[in-house]
Image (cartoon, rainbow, N blue to C red; front, top):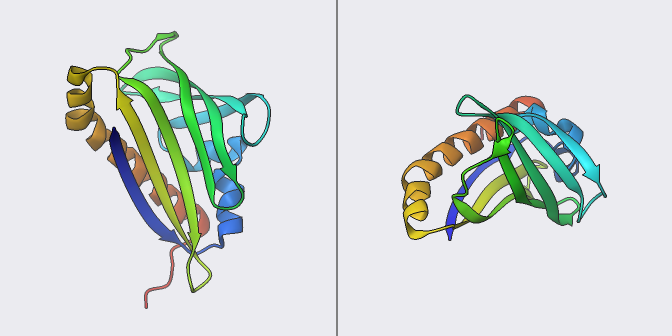
Length: 158
């Protein structure tokens, strides 16, 4: 299992952050490499959607299923299928799950934790994910957290 975790505090309540991170329509405003997300069926846990964006200069599409939806603390989705330029993407992971976890802070803000979990498709692909994928994922997660702070506010220094 490969895990990448990044976190940041934002100056908004968990309910306010939840309004942004749980809605497919607002995902492009905060998630790096995402241009839009289309809901194809359902709502909440079990929702099916397609994330459109760019990845290393290619047009990307990721079919997703929401596997956890606990208002206002956790939304998680797994990748069902991935495409680059309209063709199936190389399969580096047998399973990919992305989680957004929210926790209230004492001052009314929220700790936002992004967590990527991947089960490599093979030993070699696991090595590639660890060497290259982990760094790229961490960078994209940091950019996503920066965008959330820009949208929702930076906590005041103590």
